[in-house]
Length: 282
Ligand SMILES: [Mg+2]
Image 1: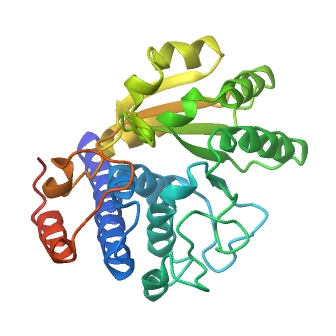
Image 2: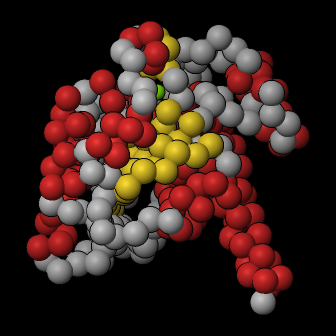
């Protein structure tokens, strides 16, 4: 039996890893088509998004507004390039449409907009709002007797926001076991390195003090991410703190000076794809 369950775990892990590869590949293609984009964040968060869409989320690809769906809320609107790639991976939007990313009249604007994109639950971008909305949604679903879950993706920059902590305390107060937060701790935010803008460590202790179940994992380790999801129980809200690397999977970008908006020259996109395919990390 142990051998069989290990094989099952390998299949599950490989499925998520393959999804993460395709999400990264899509993100590079989208960035090249537009000549720009928040590619560094998408590469860093690809494993988190793959774990959600290839393993965790309950949804119907042909009915993105199905009432019984789990809700995935992207607080960080500029990560939309990564979410669009995940939505294509999930079959909710067509892969061909990804090439319109950031273009006039596209359903895939550079910052996520709920009214434009199937499967985009909220218009994120003003940091610190996602978890507040997630708490309201989780409360509402519970009132409706739904067993759907709410998964909120937020960034380490959002831990600077007071509204995030108000929401965290509210979620624990209401015992929202149907709520999972994932924090992309990439040590970077728009104004520079997170540690230099506002010190937020010890992050795990802060969530724990607010009454949350806490796991901290390497957010670029698929098995660690799946293990954290498996450990979630429904007695209280859960947070999975994910340490990630900007540009993950593409050494050219992993080694570049970290910037919120990463510039990639026209002749570098193919190099990025080649490095991704080679599967070598810096
Ligand atoms: Mg960040």
